[in-house]
Image (cartoon, rainbow, N blue to C red; front, side, top):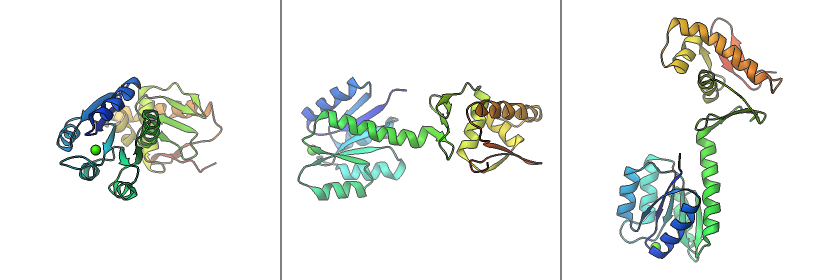
Length: 227
Ligand code: CA
């Protein structure tokens, strides 16, 4: 999916310049010249990042920051004046993720945006084992073991995702069936055994470590630390 960025900046020249550069990166851009419009877009659109000028007429950048943080962790990069360190401190206290000092080079802003997006997508869409050897991207479904691509079925993917979201938790076959197929049905419980076995086999092609452990009489558990 296209990355969606909101630019909140009352200086139209700066807003347009930033817009041009970010469009070149292939982002979908929304622009707000004041706080009211910004809040309207924030309420309506699914955004991936906000570039936020702190000094706005009407609703200020701080207020927008505060509003956004009440309900989401969407990354915010603030634009601040060179001289005003208090602005930056206040912005960070309100929950901004990074800042760029005006006047700035659009290239620098793009680099900051990419870095912040990498950090936030790492948090949200990449799940991994504690030793980082097994990685799963929830968005792209790309799954790797020690950087080797794993060809896994959608069912195996959902089982692996379940394990990685709650490491060390013991799952019964019926719980795994519910997560993998959407409901718990006895004959599906039986096939979970096969799916887990296949998943183990595929993972073991690229590591000697055993991650999925059988808990006798109960089900399965993901554990990095057991040798
Ligand atoms: Ca301004």
